[in-house]
Length: 367
Image (cartoon, rainbow, N blue to C red):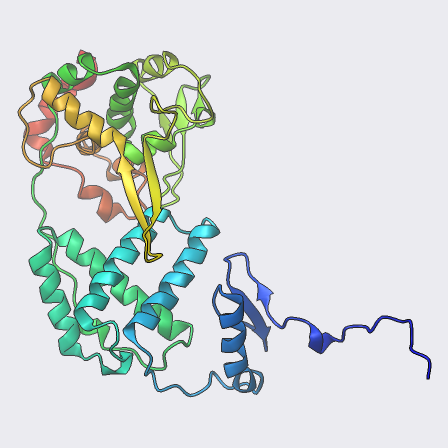
């Protein structure tokens, strides 16, 4: 019998059943809805096969006992969040916060413990632990928010059929305290004692409410020299900022040498604020944020012999700028300056404008 010379043609069933989504996850559209199965090709395929009969039948998902471990849940969620980092939908800095937070959560709850064993009391004890670990309410609330986000994701994406009573774990009430801002005399000393780059950053902090990350991410293309404005979205919120530049700010920027697309580079040619990725011996990925601007500013405070309260740093310039803007009486002006999506958030940066405004009015005039 003669063998056919024709190559065997692959049928539709021979093809890999999943599609690689732009987020890095393998997915499949079934009955008009997209289901995601993870970033690992083999694991995603197995997850799909486990659920296929139920999904194609129109049922929500295969019945689960929610008996897999806390470690498995955390890893699944972090795997999803890492895919968002790779697609540009999430910053590496926030992913690093999530990684650190969920490691703390797993350590307290027990990484090998079944998810369905987590009780409301366990979550309340975790909140108590956070209160003892962090001095600020923001630190406690960030960890609570990350934990809740993971369980909401698990429920929404049908990873879990039931989640613990996370609504019983409340965030800590934020007590607003008056925080220090810089006086005109202090700012004058800082500017006179700074390098060309740091001087431009200081003025951007005062003029535009820029933090260290804003300064580090500033590109030449963001600056419109004709209209004397800076047009730059805030990475954290995605809010567009179109702000006028002071004459002094523009002149300080013009003195800088162009070394690339970004305005500011360190002497080593790196960005001033960057995320460093390291892999340990046990193949644990760790992200750490290095802020050279804050470090340089701390050195400047010592150099100028300025005696400041604890917690005063480069970000204090942003608070000073917000308080200066508040004298207009328009809270929306403060919101626009800071690039906040929530007006309530913008007001937390504004300090007492009754006594401090008089001092601040002379800041720009004295530059």
